[in-house]
Image 1: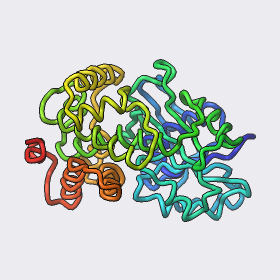
Image 2: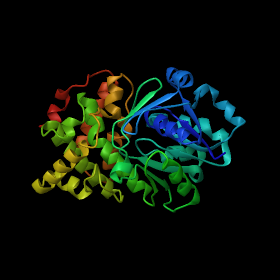
Image 3: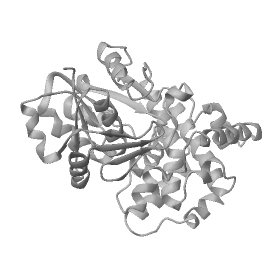
Image 4: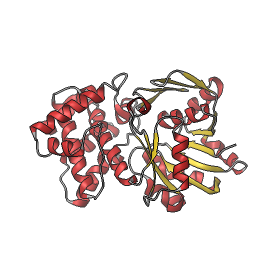
Length: 352
């Protein structure tokens, strides 16, 4: 038997990745705080659908209250897939059950390695970015992927890295494990990959949360929502570069084009961004509302403070303007507090 992999948070990403790894024969346990989801997986299996086919996988799914059972079966690799605001308790919960050489992986939106390290130490902390997976747990026990697999587009969906940038045996092994789900690679640029993924998320997440619209308005529309998305992309690149990160392509588009289109308002760069977004939309099975958009539609707390809010906070630290991120963050915070409802008119003032 191989390593014992435990996914803490078995919703969209954790359930999809963990389910496919269980299907591939890995020793996987799924832990989730959503009781109906756990019971549906136990009773009927985990239904995985979308761009990688339809599968029903028999999985070992447990409630959060059952983790003490890991005393008898320690955790070799704990993969945190919770919302960012749940990172600390998830890391603290799993810490007593780690095997002697066990470690914790962040497979989340945002940049949460430091939060995990405060609980388990930097030596037990590993990062993984997941890009272009586009999954949704649309009802208990059922998860669907909406984007073409990386194996079809030659894109590395999983990028696994150590916080210090060295290539180690454990991240090489982890990339091999994730390759059973979709294309995976080891990165020596974890922080740059993190900011690249964050930039991609923040182009749509807060904007769709504030407006209630889907991503077609950003990717193929040419109205105010699209213009704001381009600004968000440009600001995120400017902040990331001021922080010293090596940023990769964002939604298939170079960071230079995002910066020049969103900040310098260069017409040629804008055309390349628009063409790139049109091509990106073609890789999706159907439109999406983003994770923040889905959360606000369902009346749940969003991750806005860990996405657009993080860019806005870091912009203040480095003295780089990011007014669009700050404005979108505040709009979604107001929706989280019940002061506003998602509506396209919410962004009229910042789009002017």
